[in-house]
Length: 223
Image (cartoon, rainbow, N blue to C red; front, side, top):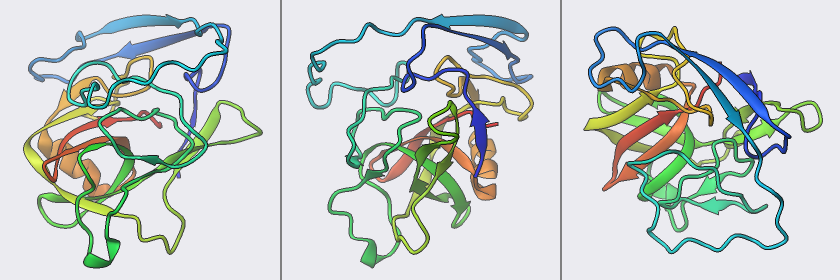
């Protein structure tokens, strides 16, 4: 398990949070959204509390392949995998309704899963599991991700698309912080880099599956 001390996240109320991020892009990376050397200060103000729950978005309104990562509120129960982006540091597991785990390991349903890529089954197929955030020290902002308990058969495997989008949280060489205010990656790196990290295990991210392939992985910063 990896432990990360979070300065602030949407699931923990705070008056304000100032995060100083030093972002360094990868050398030679085309189309990088981060300058070669940049210092960005992000200040976020929590939303005012409301007695009314926000209206539900119509099904299919979220796009997992474009736009910023949002962090909707979660219920106390498990959440089904869907096109809606889950909370980055959500404390409940997502699940795939109706998935038959007795027929061998296979892709999860189309949608965005907060998960860990923990192995490569062959040169192209990645194995991954759902994860949830576990706060430490009585609800502090420290914690770690954990997967299903030992003996749980909840695991998926899907080919990594040739044109997969991989947004790294630590740069393509693993030496930087290339993240936004939600602690998710912004630096696009190669498919080979994604495969290399997935093969080692411990790569936490928002994994988008479409047509039984992994088409996007947005790494969650946990260092």
